[in-house]
Structure formats: C-alpha cells, structure tokens
Image (cartoon, rainbow, N blue to C red; front, side, top):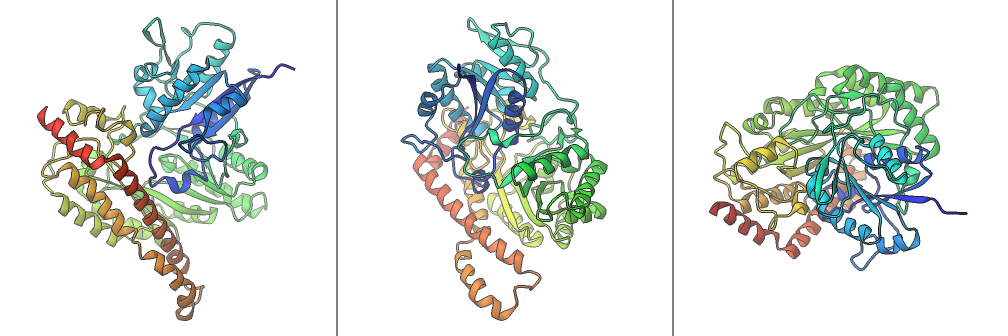
Length: 514
C-alpha cells in the first residue's frame, strides 16, 4: 500500500530560556493545532503531524534540539509548515527551512512576522507565505500543489517565481464565522511530553489599537455554545482539566463572555463537566468594574487572570494607547484578588515616549515600578522590555526615527521582550534599561524563596493551620518565586555566553553615529 504524503507543521524552539519557558513544555500554540486540524479534515489524502520544539521528547541532535534530519529519514514530509508568530524564533525557522528545502520538501510559513515581512521569508528558504488567518488558505495551497495547479488565484498568499515576488490579494484573510472551524485536535502533536494546559479560543481581533500590538483585525467571536462544546469534547477525549483561553481580550464580547461562563457553571452543576475544570484567562484590568462577570468567572473555575498593566507611568500608557489611568490600577487589582483570583501582572519597562517626553532616569523608573508592584501586590510578574515587533505602529515609528538597532548586531532572536532592540529615551542608556529589568525581576523573584519552602512545610503549620485563608496563595507564590529566580539565573548565564551586553553597547554607538 502506498504511504500517504505527510505535512509536518513545526512550532520552532524559543532561542532563550524566558518567562514563557515554565509553561512552554506543558502547553502548545493553538494556531498550528487549528491549521493541522483543518488539513487533517480536508479530504486531501494527507497525513498531518505537529512538532512543537518547546514541548518535545523525540530524537535530538548534537545541540539538544529536535533532529529533523532523522525525522525526515524516518518519515519524509513532502510539505513542511512553520509557525512564525514569534519574531524571536525566526532564525530557527530559516535554519529549518533550509534543511527541508535541501531534501525537496515544499516550505510554507504563516504568522504575524512573515505576514508583515513576506519577502524576507521568501528569501530565506520559504516557498509560500500565508498572510492572515490561514486554516482554509493552507488547504487551498496544498490542494493546488498536489494537483499541479498554479498559485495565482489563491487569495492571501505571497510567493516567488523566477526571482520575482507575488503578493496575491487580499492583504489579509479573516474568518468571519468562528463557529465553523473544527475542534482543535491535539492528538496531531507528535513526540509531545504532555499537554497540561489546553489552549482554546472564542474571539479573534480587537477593537483597541495598542501601539505595540500586532492584532489589527476586527473583533469577531464564536458562540458561547461552540466554545463549551469544544471544552466538553476535549475533557472527554483528551482528559483535559486545565484550559488557557488565549484570547487577547476575553471580554471583547461582554455578554457572550458571561453567557459562556454561565454555561460552564450549568454544565458542572448537571454533571456534564467535572468540577475540577479550571481556566487561566487574559483580560483587561477594567473588567474589575463588572462584579457580575467576576462572580460568574469564579464559579466557572477561573483561577488565574493574566492582565496587561503595561506601566505605572501615565505618559507611557498614553503612548501605548492603553486607555488606563495609573491611579485606578491598584484598586482594580485589589478587586480581582478579593474575588479569589491569582493575578499575573504583565508590564513593559522603558516604553519610548511619543509626543510627551518622559524625563525620568532609569533609577527613578525602577522606583516607580517597584512602588506600584508593592501597592498592587500581583501574585506573579512578567516584566518585559518594549519590543518593536514588525507590523506594529511602534516598529514603524522607531524605524522612521532611526532608533532600531542594526539587525546584524541585535538579531531577530533578541526580539523576545528580554532584550533591548532600540535606542531608549534620554536620559537612559541602553545598559541602564537592560539592567533595570533584571533588577526589578530579581527583586520580585528573590532567591530566599527557596528557604521559605521548608519553613512553610515544617514551621508554618504550628503557627496557623493549612485552612488559613492566605495559605494557598502564600504557598503558590513562594514556589513561583523560587522558579522565577531559577529562570532569571539561567537567562543571565545564557546572555553571558552570547555577550549580549557588549553587543548592546556597540549597537548604541552605531545608532548614535547615524
């Protein structure tokens, strides 16, 4: 019997240990799973597998990365797809694209980065770029390639022929009916260690226009019933218990969001869904004003809320177009915690001013951030440097101002939120900005959390019982505090090896000379 052709979809490895590493090896990205599921159900006589290099336990090469030469020898893929939504993973994508092209595979890429820089991808081993939402477009591309038809009539792709670039219209493809795509099939993941947190989604697009964000499509959402059915199916077929709703703004459709969580509460009450089902969500801080929403979220099993605070400095919030006031943020946080949520604060340090100049030195900014964190008391903290991702207004502004550091010195792999990629506002220097984030994160994730662990196990029970109201929060935050400390130490070791601080000084000098 002739073996069917294989489409291997690859989620590339992160270049550095970072704040996302703690969950990357027990989760995966939803977009590639949706692409793979659509291909698998498209009647294309095609086998589909997904390799998530961040959640992988298969054969490895000498660099301890997945061994694609061996994978290709064991089961050759005619088509190699690449997930390119994270700019920092692009060097790995280009490396793998050359590997697969060298053995005759057709390479296809999709995601925010290549959607905005299609020609760069087409010059680095990619044959076809899918721009925008690609579940259905990829199926059209594979169908055309399998039937030896041309690509000219397929909307939303870029390709190259005879050294000439072609960008088919429209520039972006959006799926309007989000009830239509099939349920995500996580069984397509090959060599995955384990999926603990299952990513799911109900909304796409956003009505806000934050300067640093790549999301520019109009807001759309699936029905609450569609998402509930996906959860019921995953709970039954995959034994899923923990879900991460990846929507950037879960409350974009406020009434639908409430209906969804109410349907989860009903399903648990009727026994159709286990009471152990829990959720991690991303939501705007202003949702604290809607007490009805918070109550139903809590009853449904929402445990962790990931919130984009961004900055405690008003002028920075204005430049980002966040629509938040610093004076409200502490009070909103207290409301979330009062309802029993664990709060994960996502913040940005050193955001470049726009019209209004922010004449704060690095020391004063660090003080402002520490003061805010002390007042708000989030459970965990993710502090990133402002990163001008391609396709954002921030990238266009800094590029026009000549403030982006040269790519040959600060490459795409450093566009991960942990490394400075542009000339910061005066009076700060590049080294001051880089070291300030390390100082704040090291202050928050202290090494002495390691010694608190035995104290909480052996001493605390004699002072207060395990039923003490703050016990779970104290225990969890101590463990995460130590884990965060370990990640920071490993990150610093890696950066010492790559000599990033010296390169940063060199990049600042080059921009200064220009």
